[in-house]
Length: 367
Ligand code: TXA
Ligand code: MG
Image (cartoon, rainbow, N blue to C red; front, side, top):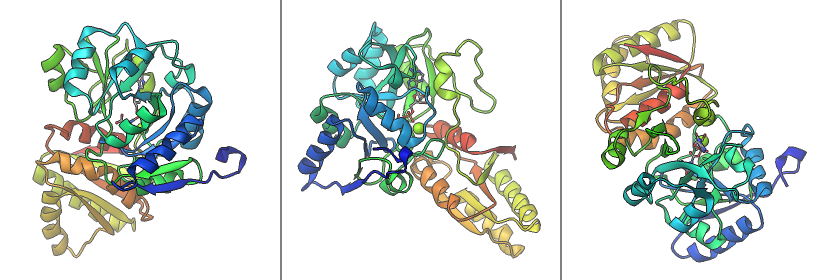
């Protein structure tokens, strides 16, 4: 069935509306029940789902995404009963997180039950579980009657999909169906918290912040690489899911971090020097940096080859929603380098935004 043997899968694409919701979900759940693969929107990013308890179905996810075996998948669930089916020894604090943040952008890593196949958990004894805040996956899980293994619906190593067109361009011919439900509201993947150790560790920042988690369950540690942060020596198993590269466009990305104007000045200098070497440069900018650099660049008669605007510096949630779209768009332009603006506020989604920008970039400069 998979593209591995050269035979392309026929990928059905459905634009989901109120009118066809019932019939599309019926077809999609039949595909899942038969061990197939369906991509769908969630509030974070698009997911690629298959029956998480069926090893053959889960294998299709790895093949379609070209995901390295051993990189653990998380499960999307529809109810507390689902959670108790797939995990055990659930700490009371994990239930409190579910009460406050579910359905929503929080993946909770728990001790796994034997019902979850090794291929799903990447042979770890734990499993990430999330209840999405989106009626398409919730209905799909309910009708299929099984938790869905559902990583982001991109080719492994590419930016996650925030639009159905991203899934179509990565996975057409590799999966059974794509449900187009419009733009993902958040645009970045969920926060991942490991509740199997004390104090719990945030493995990936997302829309639920460390402070919000601490307000509910007390002390939480940050365990993700963020340039200067992270590198906890004792978290080797817990970090298993992080040893693989993420969010990497084909074009080299240079990230310039710092305060507003200094970033703009550095960006102009970089653009000058890349242009003098004959390199094609694209820019990924906040609105403010775009305005500030426009004046400099006009004075020197210098224009970037391409420019994508993410949003205002003080509204990182806007930039978060647009980030993967911007990276994907610029990546298709045949540029030599993408210079990204790291001047966004670190509040709210700003922490997750800068984390993804750092992951996407191979050169980081502090202005
Ligand atoms: O927002 C999201 O979480 C999206 C949507 C589709 O639900 N899904 C997503 O899946 O981003 P994925 O597979 O791309 O990311 C799940 C993250 C990975 O970093 C994975 O390594 C980690 O969770 N993870 C899953 N199970 C784990 C475990 N048992 N221990 C440590 N990390 C785990
Ligand atoms: Mg992913």
